[in-house]
Image (tube, rainbow, N blue to C red; front, side):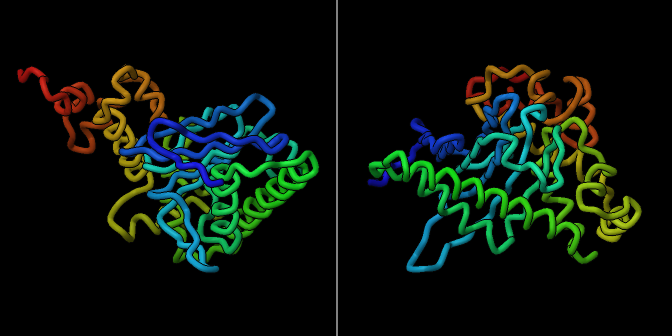
Amino acid sequence: MVIAVNDTAPIEAGFGSVRIRASVHARPVSVASGAADDEVSLLIALDRPPSIRGAVTEKGPSTALLASRAQAAMTPAAKCHLVLTFPAQVLNGIGIEAPFAHAIDTHSALFWPFLTFAWTCATTRDRQTGLSLYFMERLLQEMIVGVVVASLKARHDKPAADLHAAALSVITARVGDPDLTAASVAAELNTSLRTLQRQFTARGTTMDRSIRGARVRHAMTLLRDPAYSSLSIERVAHTCGLANGSSLARAFAAEGHPSPTRVRAARRPHAVRA
């Protein structure tokens, strides 16, 4: 039996040590990982739920982030999310050491079949025996490792022409990480900072400007959404990887936007105009 996922009822399913949470929203929102200290989360943001027609998986825009608990990760704002949480030891021996927050390559051959399978696992309520749950747990763990290893390999093999797009994916996935810098993006893509900076310069911008722009866009989404009205400006700044509200205000000004307070007030239907 397939369970409908809607804006008010995220679906959660457990397969031994692997937990899956699927959610669909009427408007773009961000979701947190919810991982414990000894766990890792794979957070995936989509524009719509994955689906299969015949034997072909329908692909769409997506962003995926692998994060340890210490990173307190949140997804970019999106209408659809899938969050898988599992023990950190599942990733032992593949070359990742905590704490970490890595963008996952969503274009690998393994990613979409894995995503569709995990979504189906979360939204299908068939009767499971202890043995079948065990095999589902092992299969999910093996698929997660395969997706992560494929993503790590893609970074090493990526040609220079793709570096700009790859860097933007990393920036989008890690927009809430206060340690996100041009140097950390270059390190994650296994390339030199100078090589990566040339890719941005050729497009009339810089890495620092792109990082700042991504943080501001994420903040604008939160400030304009009534669902996040309870977040203070300071908290919005932290969620976007900035130190405080003043840093957020300076970033807004640098991008040519009004102050965060004015942006939030403008979306309120009864806001008082100064």
